[in-house]
Length: 117
Image 1: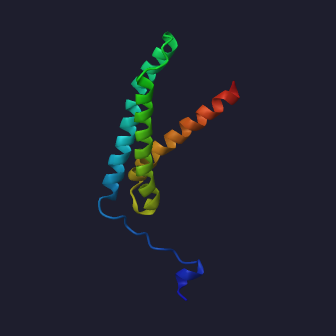
Image 2: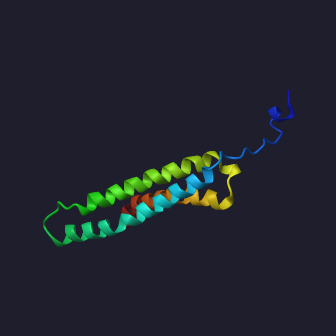
Image 3: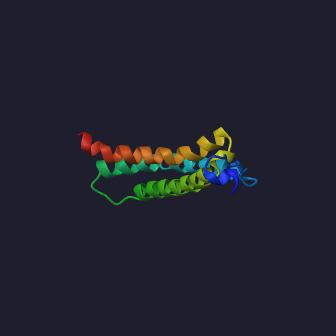
């Protein structure tokens, strides 16, 4: 038996494959950009829904589409970030995990708001 197999030894940190940090950064930036792009259509759609009797508008589905794409990009950035956590720089760790953390925070707040009223 080796010393590492008994639970007392430390395992070596493997470096992530070449280009992983760049892919995580670009996916996280796309996620934030798509989340930001969902804000104006959501505001316009909410204004149309509250100001008129016409409930069918294209702004709300467009906002949801941007948000859903941003969520997919956030997942796409978070999975390799968590997979190669020990081998990544601290900035890349945070950049890869924060878009998904912000989504979970906003969803948690949205679920708690009706309970607090």
